[in-house]
Image (cartoon, one colour):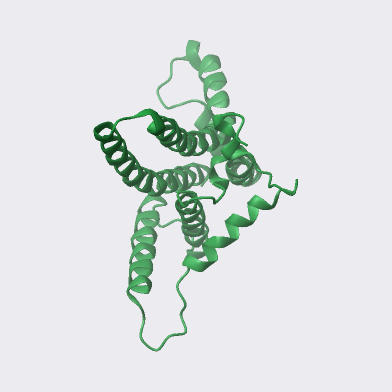
Length: 224
């Protein structure tokens, strides 16, 4: 029995085990097989997305990184997008709506950027703390502001992803909970609004994955 609206995001099953995280493995079914003689339409669509992402990330990183770095962000985009997409199916746990997953991804990336930047490019990291042309009297304040903005980056990445996924699911739950007491005309309007919200959630699933991966790419380009 659902005690509150946030119970749908509770990572526990009826057997008192956290088996709902297995839903993240379902994304393997959406990865197209490369062993057919004739590629399918889904294979062509998948490869078209990959080519577009590789081209975008090359522009963002100014061709300073190798292909392995680009594959990291492409893989990050596909993991987040497919997890967001799987969360739209009924009775499937939305793992990307939890801070456990989103904060783990963002914190690992941010820590790797910071360690690499301060160990390899210390002068570049110090120069980022004080923007060019800052008056001398404002330099201590700019160092403090830039330091705080760097520290909160993993939190903002994680909260942005989780909050957007939670907001859409809660809105659909709130609208559908009033369907029992509605008339036929209002019920049809509610179903129409639910259909529009599902289309919106599909776009949000792709947009949030793209924003997460692009911001991670921009943060890495600052370190180099």
